[in-house]
Image (tube, rainbow, N blue to C red):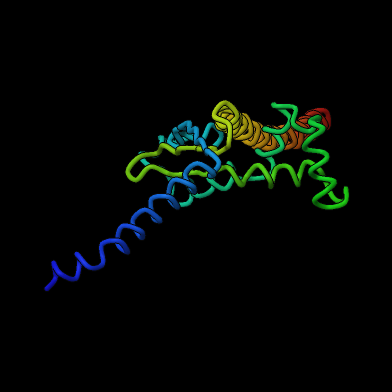
Amino acid sequence: QVLAILAARWPWALAVFLLCVAATAAVSTTMLKRYTASASVMLDARSPDQVAGGAPNTSLPGGYMATQMDLIESERVGRAVISALALDKDTDLQAAWREAGDGKGDFEAWLSESLQKGLSIRPAAASNVVTIAYTSGDAAHAAVMANAYVKAYIDTSLELRMERLRQYGGFFDARAKELRADLERAQEKLSDYQQRN
């Protein structure tokens, strides 16, 4: 009975099969090609604090990985990418910004947010490596953007560390001045005491 039913309905089955194949071929040929380039960065917070001293940590702190991933997606890193690739001077991007918001707001903030749409960050399951991937319709553009995000992240991370060290340096300079002033006052008192006695 099954064979008899299939023999009677084979034109319909063939038509459905051909329709599915044609739809799949049409979608495959009309879809835009997307390319994803990726680059990896190792996060290392195990070095000892140069100010506080102490032995290095053996593993990353709990929130460190999430913090670094947020930093990669931050507007500060996005602006560094824009600056490094001179995207703020691209007339096509400026025209797209004017069309999107009638030229209102900050162009670099809008561009940084737009660039993040192609960005994806994947932490490794059992290591301190983070993969930064960028997806674009052009393979070369995807590679340039992935590498630019990695470099901007590294530069920004170093800048933040240097800012922290400068803050510590300012604190220690101020404290040293206070201690020098205390020492000078103590020496004056000692000198006065010695002259009187």
